[in-house]
Length: 173
Image (tube, rainbow, N blue to C red; front, side, top):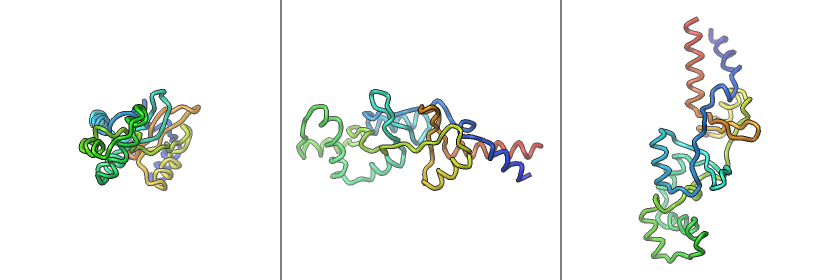
């Protein structure tokens, strides 16, 4: 029976187990907006797009937790190079930065805490290769690409759901 399970699991592709459509966050959102989005959708990571809809990276709860644990001076630095300074051409004083850092989750944009690239797999990739990628890279999700478009996401939960589903079918037979 175990051999049948492994054969069935090995036949699955990324497109068989991925979740879709893929939710995205905007690079200008505040960390607070991102946390609200995560809570509303019961998720822990999303790809990040710019105002043109171009993929810019990925942001996860790990990124948020890292940001929250930063010393105030580092939060001030991230806020100081954020969109406020870019768009307004304004240099913040240290007093301004200290005030903004008091509410860093509202004043720091997602672009400052995200990972600036996506780890992706082809829609036809085997589930085994996806699992190996997640394990080797020590990540919890990979994004699925088909014809150069983002079509889905595979998380460790998707992999476990596939395993449970196949094992349940084998136990019935």
